[in-house]
Length: 252
Ligand code: NAP
Image (cartoon, rainbow, N blue to C red):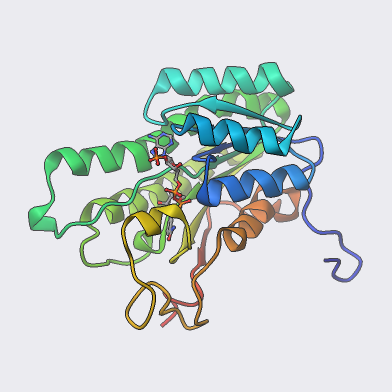
């Protein structure tokens, strides 16, 4: 779509890393980025699915099996991105897990695991890509949080802590990295129709996951369009900011 003669956001010449890209929102972001001119490094624990998505995108994509909780894994991803495409301009910290339990029934082990994947993983990712982004003269980091990172939700003590934490990591990192031209923003999806929600057996309908004022469940492409905007130079004056994409769920 062209509005007032301005082109839609593009990523020509840019190299992006998208974690959790074997399926769901990460897959959609990787596909949209490639369509917008980027070369993309897809990472995930799900190797077969990730390889298949990268192969279907073609020469503009490579897949690396990667656990976001591993600092060594992040070093390898950054290295592979530079080997394959020569630079890193964009990081989307998308990989995450969603588990719920009332706070008094949450286990220490699961609480720590959720924090490790959803919060420590993105921190390690930021640390791993900053040297390459500095070399490239700047960059954009997009952290996929959640509406559970904007407000309290019953049963979300662990997940909500990780996603509120990611919001804090975003704001502080944005200040640390602004002088290098590296922007950092967070995206807060409401209910988005992906395998994450299907696996949890969440039901649609009143009180279910499509109770947003816009009366529909989000789809991965909704989120991908916003993430593309934040990844691209179209958002070059935006950093340290939170973007809810939830059909109005957190507005009231
Ligand atoms: P998804 O379909 O489950 O995709 C997430 C991907 O991340 C999966 O392929 C998953 O692989 C991978 N992953 C999990 N742990 C990993 C690790 N340690 N290292 C590397 N990859 C790992 O979920 P989605 O809905 O697209 O979620 C994407 C992001 O949006 C997540 O951060 C999620 O918290 C957030 N979000 C989702 C919703 C929603 O309604 N769907 C709402 C708000 C926020 P495995 O299957 O092996 O775990």
